[in-house]
Amino acid sequence: MHDAPVGHSACGGPRDFDALGLAKAEFDGWVGYYRREWRKVLAASVRMVRLGFGMPWPKTIRGAWFVLRANQLWAPYPQNDPIGARAYMRRFYALVAADGQMSFDPGKAAKLEVEWWRVHRLHQRENQAVEDNLTKALVDLYSYVYDVPAETVQQAALHRVIAMRHSDAWVEAGCKLDDPLLTEELAELNRSYAALLDAVKR
Image (cartoon, rainbow, N blue to C red; front, side, top):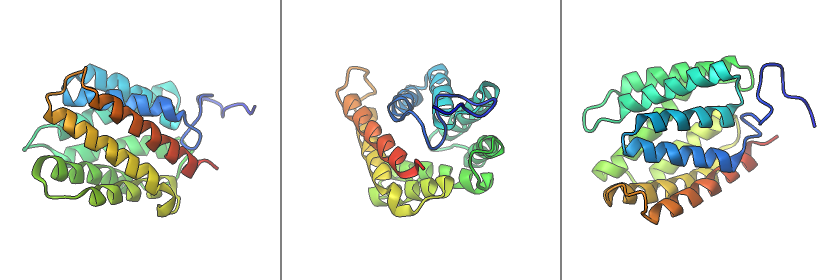
């Protein structure tokens, strides 16, 4: 077993993450987001950043805060702050790029990140987008950030979109914690991150 780079987590990184742990962290983040339980969203964001990118703890905490603030600015409907959300996500992706394990333009990564948020909102709230548009937005993000061919991350995107379908139905039903839709949502997130790991692991 190889030692982790100095200052980095031994639990993995952007191409060797804990797929099930990352899926559960995102699941918890989505539940907290729609119930407006921001402490839970922050805790989930810390886990997602740590598991997903393996950065040192100071960068992990800072990055999770940027993700939280981006989500808080995006959350209000119909009046939100997409410019502010992109600015915080740019700061997040700048941290990731500066960590040295991935190479991309933080501004473009942030734009692609918030773009799938936008397409999802059009689909969820206004019926102005189809799931294929959402899948494409996720494929565009994954293929750019991980620098892999688009076709290799198609399955990861598809399963994440199905997870969103269950999440949207759960929101529509009242965000109850005992709703069986949550079990289906988590199962699809597990499939999504397993597929993503297969696509990006080198």
